Image (cartoon, rainbow, N blue to C red):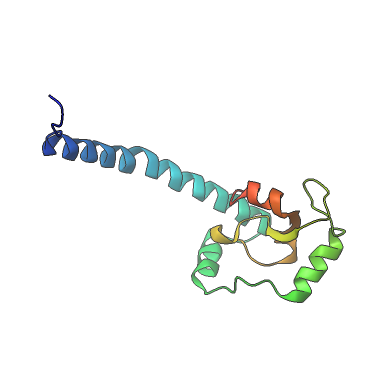
Length: 123
């Protein structure tokens, strides 16, 4: 019959199954992946995981100081590190700011806009 809607219990059953799968399968894997990235970053920086968590809890300024920006641009030769372009340059965090990366010169690189957009928040 056309125009019949599925029963409400079927929708609720689907939502319940989705929630069980999400919380039992996807979420633990995602948390493990994030912890692995954090441990790699801690190892690279020579800090403990607790120190990284403490640093994340402190309000951080997202703005990169002008002197740091100029240093990174000069260090990288005013060229994109991925494709070599010297047009539409941006300063990029190697370890993403959203995942706890800081504004240290060692965590910054020059990328052109298209390379930076294609990279996203990946490590």
